[in-house]
Amino acid sequence: MIFGSPTVTSPGSRPIASLSLDLDNEWSYLKTHGDSGWQELPSYLDLVIPRVLAFLAARDLRITFFVVGQDAALDCNREALASLATAGHEIANHSFRHEPWMHRYSPREVDEEIGRAEDAIECATSARTVGFRGPGYSLSPAILEVLAARGYLYDASTLPTVIGPLARAIYFRSAHLTGAEREQRADLFGSASECLRPIRPYRWAVGGEGLVEVPVTTLPLLRVPVHVSYLLALSSRSKALAIGYLRTALSMCRAMRVQPSILLHPLDFLGADDVASLAFFPGMAMRGEEKIVAVGRFLDVLCSRFDVRPMLDHANVAAASPDLPVVVPGHRRPRRGPRRPTGGEHE
Image 1 (cartoon, rainbow, N blue to C red):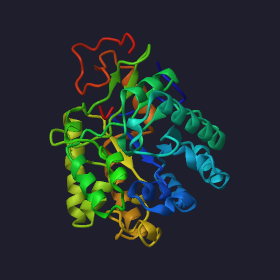
Image 2 (tube, rainbow, N blue to C red; image 1 turned 180 degrees about the vertical axis):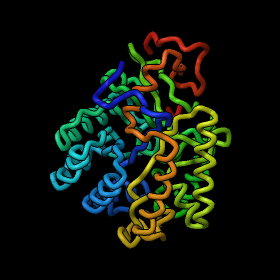
Image 3 (tube, one colour; image 1 turned 30 degrees about the vertical axis):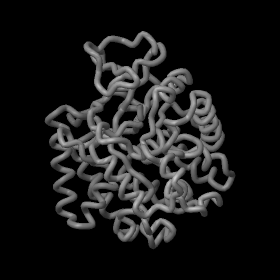
């Protein structure tokens, strides 16, 4: 099944790549970190959205924004969020409450969470979402079944990397969590076995048509991150190292026929000088203006090698492939043969 208006063919000689931004807000970071101030829903959307839109417009880029439903439900955010769709960017679903333990929800809770976000996002942006990414890469068979039943085209919740436990340990080291909250977040960022998931798109065997998965790209073979927050961490040590790493990663992607899906976050455009409450977060010592310059260098390299599109384009290209591998929910490897699904993830 092919959705929407984006073009699915890639002009010229450059292979397609996708670019997306998880629009996690200030309160969602504080919530996961265990800081009580999150209930007041502090927001930086009025600051970061115009900044990101100007950055993308200067490069003539259209990308996908994964929007949190709670933000879309507030009148004070609607003008900023509507500006994303007005500028021609794809709007996708990033859950309503942005809880990275969403994989622990019951099927009924999952359906309510996704549906509530859908309605709020459509009210704010006039866009009906057909793509989803779980908060903190949270995924379960129940989530996949609900997405298929609700008519979604693609999921983008998998990050096939080995560093999940390390990222969780770093996060917990500065967090203010009770024992119950630590247990609730015990699967945050997944296990090292996430690296066993495919790095290329595939189809989940759920529903009648199946659901396309577009993984967040990690370095082929080594399975370490390539997303922009990781590049900024490298850049804080050496700008040349970060650019060299990205060029190597993209060369490996082209050699192994991996069409990369690169991930951005708001904090890639913000420093502690912009949001003092998030000074604990890695990379926030770098000023916002300095980050914008670095991100520009990274995306210039990406655009020189790939035709960069929204996620929906990437998913449509994958869906049109007659030999797209099929994976059964609860498994991390494709089953033999690219057969069509007959109906149906921290596991």
